[in-house]
Amino acid sequence: STASAHCAPLPQRVCYIATRLRPPSSTRRDFRFFTMPRTIQYSEKYQDDIYEYRHVILPTDVARLCPKNKLLSETEWRQLGVQQSRGWEHYAVHKPEPHILLFRRPNGTDPVSGKVPENWKPATIPPAMQVNA
Image 1 (spheres, rainbow, N blue to C red):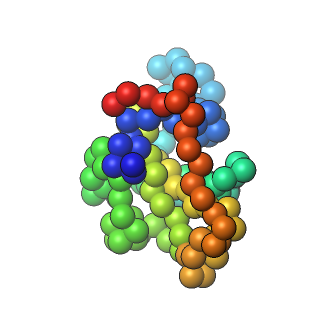
Image 2 (image 1 turned 90 degrees about the horizontal axis):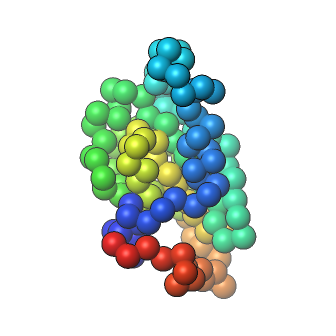
C-alpha cells in the first residue's frame, strides 16, 4: 500500500541519485559548500521496466511547508509549487532528505491526461525483498 511506502527501503537507483546529490566528500569542511537550491529543482527522468521516475528538490522555504513523513497527494505537491505533467505519484519519503520528493508513474502514462495504459499492471515485490513494517 502507498501509505507504508515510506517504511520500505529505497530502490538502489533512488539511493544512487540521492547519493549523487551530496557533496563529494563527507568531511565537515566540505558540507559548507552544499547549499539548498533557491528554486524548485527537477531531475531528469529515469526509468526501469515498470516505472518512470524523477525527483524534485525543494528549497528551504518550501521544504518547511511540506508535511514530514507523509506521502503527498497531487493537490498537496502542486500547492507547494511543484509543476510537472499529469500522472506522477509521490511514492516514497527518504527520511534523511525529506526535502527531496520522489515521484514515479507507470511507463507509457499519457502526460496530458495522466491515464495509465490499459494493459499496465503494477509489479509485485518478491517476498525476499519485502520489509516488515
